[in-house]
Length: 331
Image 1 (tube, rainbow, N blue to C red):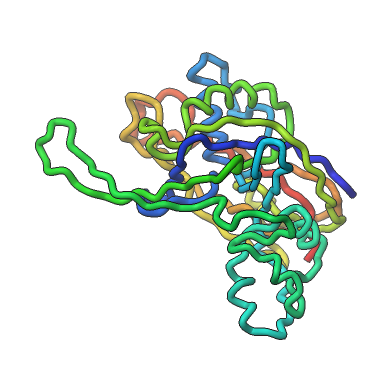
Image 2 (cartoon, helix red, strand yellow; image 1 turned 180 degrees about the vertical axis):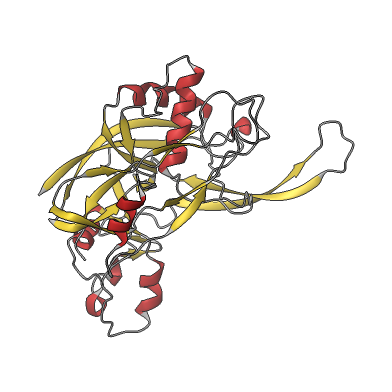
């Protein structure tokens, strides 16, 4: 059945650097994960004096940020969703197509609907002509609408007691009106206010030199969701209990990836202190659920990463949102 999704589009007016867990400036990730975005939104609300709920829940759940292509403000955007980690492998007549297919990481809405409905993409070379780098789409897009550029920079000590040290920084640029978008479920009243602050604060690394500034707008899309007892997460996911996790992993067709989440505290005077860490499942994983459904679901929990045992002076909680938007997928 067709299901409507609320969309928030971020059009970046400056370059963007998204750090990984290794803090390697020479490589920028191309997406912002939902928990990092949620933390930034929460921080912005706190800065302008909004009271943060005691459980850290702002009343809405967001997906991670995914790319979209848009030529001009009057053109329709082409939204891309991540390729599922679990999919049927095609039979290829031309082995040379395998390399092209392997590079695909993003599917437009039309192809994403086919994938979650259990359709085998690229069967006998079909649809290969619609591969544009990492993106699979029937629409006319520029292959480099989302590009990476590495430039050399220099660090200088505050008191000039040390020699300047060069390093390289990778930054992401978006052509025309392109950018990143996220899906949201729930009450967006606080979200709108938080984005008004965040757009001028910036997201990502080195915001103090102008990285990560954006404008935002709203949109809607419709996805045909299948009825299935398998689901995929559009957000970072932290299970609510060991029981829930065991049930969702207890199947041979489950496929997932996970990563460590944490990072530096951003509130003064604790900026040099790291948060506690937690592992979360990354978007596009596939899990098993107990009941067949064709509806969106929200699963997961919000955790407090305050390192209170090591640094008891940090009084406020440091929330990391592991609640995820789940959609049904056929395997």
